Length: 255
Image (cartoon, rainbow, N blue to C red; front, side, top):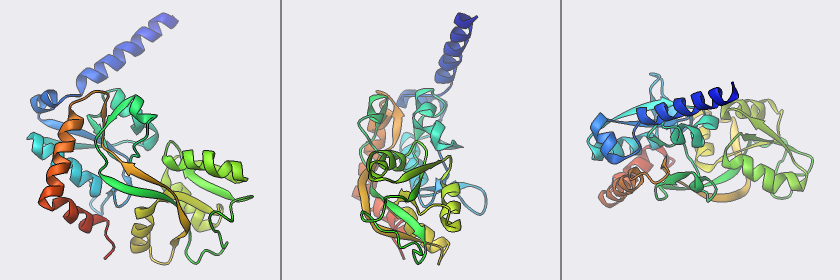
């Protein structure tokens, strides 16, 4: 029975991989590039008022698809399942969701070159009523992180040894709700997210202290896929033409 179950799981994985392309030739043949993203990381990916997923990452993915001569199909995938399972299983052709390039992840997936330089920071309630600071004020505090993100690794490796309690959330919105309610002292998130929150929800959130760690975001593909090289060509074109800066101005640069 166990062998039969394992065989069934292997067959299912194989069928999933076959159903979705992992190479440029296969993407062009089917005429669509399938993007997986967790639409909860504004301004990188989020659902607009019309319910459609949009953002900085989505526009870059659209440019990759356009250069390949195919349309872009977007699938919402929770971050825990997005990295790396959705890519390694073949459920999607590429993943973008402010995904940090790490040596550990690069063992199982292929990254494009960096397309955005960011940092992990503490998000607190506006006015910082708890007077939370970094690195002086971590011991005895409960810090929120989203599961399977760089923030979780930072929390476990850097903050927990200093006496912080780490609370893991399935989604970023849950962590923000607890920050707003004062149930956690701070939430670890991406620096551009703080700027975006201050624009969308003025008077509710702020950054506390300095940056924890810097990080580079990359587009994610199946291990060894030539789609990574194609994405790099698109990124180079966008930067050379000035369109990359236009996207930065559209989504990230604070007006």
